[in-house]
Structures are given as structure tokens and as C-alpha cells.
Amino acid sequence: MSLRLGDTAPDFTANSTAGKINLYEYLGDGWGILFSHPADYTPVCTTELGTAAKLKGEFEKRNVKMIALSVDGIDSHHGWVKDINETQQTEVNYPIIADEDRKVAELYDMIHPNANEKLTVRSVFIIGPDKKIKLTITYPASTGRNFNELLRVIDSLQLTADYSVATPANWKHGEDVVIAPAISNEEIPAKFPKGHKEIKPYLRTTPQPNID
Ligand code: BEZ
Image 1 (cartoon, protein in one colour):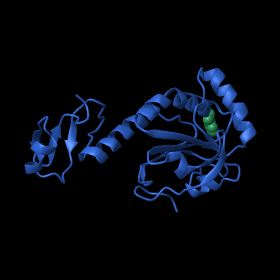
Image 2: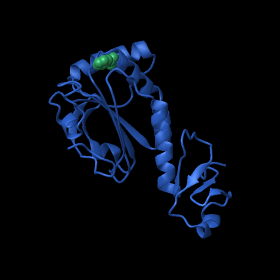
Image 3: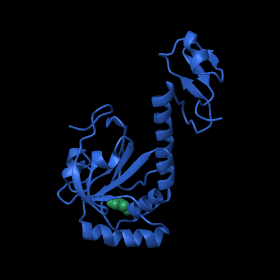
Image 4: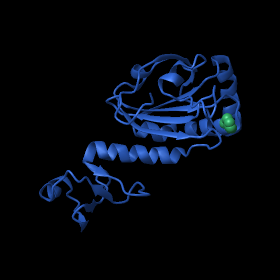
């Protein structure tokens, strides 16, 4: 059965470009992003892995560890990483799981047989410090993911976790956020000292709480 939001992210130990890796040990008590790729030496995946490597600092700032997966073997991965570094002008600086036996792909339901019987689709799982799944997305093999969007979602998830706020449509870092319906009007001044606007009783906004 597929994994859903709030489910516990299944733990696994697998071979990767950084050696043997256990998911839970690797994540520690931080956040994680696990993303799958259809196959090595493919053009869209090459650009994705390069883009992700360039954004590693942004993921680190948010205490998010990155881990990629492809169902090819470790020798293939190491050769491909050289190509990624060369063509994308970066250094792949996070582990890529060599999931030749598709153990992890099956655990996370990353193979969608009606799309392709053998290859993984472009799945993304964001895992919280409590090891629960906070986000899943599935892109087709032909569409590269937007890693800036993934950072935006992580910002939103972390705001929700820390401040009882949600983020409106197309929200970007620095813009006003929405006060969670569970917060009563009486609680607002103490929780949101920057003030708030009540557009409707159910639609209350406040400046983003974690910036000056
Ligand atoms: C790619 O990464 O370029 C790709 C992989 C599988 C199918 C289509 C494109």
C-alpha cells in the first residue's frame, strides 16, 4: 500500500555512494528528503541531481538531510556522479542509494507499474524529525522537479511545526502567513506579537513569525 501523510517513514539500510546507510541513523533527529530517479545516465535526472547538489546549503540551513535513490548499481552511480559533476558544474554531496534489488523502491511504492514496470517514478518524501511523512509528491519521469518549490514546502512545514501557522497559496518566504484555525482570537496577541489582520473570522493573517 502506498505511504500517506502522517505514516511512519519505513526505515531501511542500503548501499549508497556514501557507503552503507541506515535511514534513521542518517537523519538523526533532523528532517529528511528522499527522492527517487528513474535511472542513471538519463538527462533529466542528471540536471536534477546537479541542482539538488547546488542547493545542499539551503537544505542544511533548514536541518534537512538529502538522500537520492536510483535502481541502478553502485558502480554505475559512481560513474554517473562524475558526469553530473562535470556537466552540472557541481559536486554531488549527498548519498545516492543503489537500489538494484528495488527493496527501498518497493517499501516506498516508488514503482508505478502502469507508468513503467521496472523504473521508479520521481517520488519525493519529506520526513519530519518524528520520522513521519510530511509530504509526498510524484512526478512523471519526463518532468524534472522544482527543488526551490521543495525548499518552499519545507519552510512552510517548519513554520507550521514551530508556530501554529499555515501558508496561503503561492506563499513565499517573508510574506504573511495564516493563523491556524485552532488558535482562538484570545490567544493571538501572546502568540503573534507582530499583530494580525482579520479578513474573515476564519481567515486571519500575521507577519511571518520567524523573521525580523
Ligand atoms: C530522464 O531522467 O531524463 C528520463 C528518465 C526516464 C524517462 C524519461 C526521462
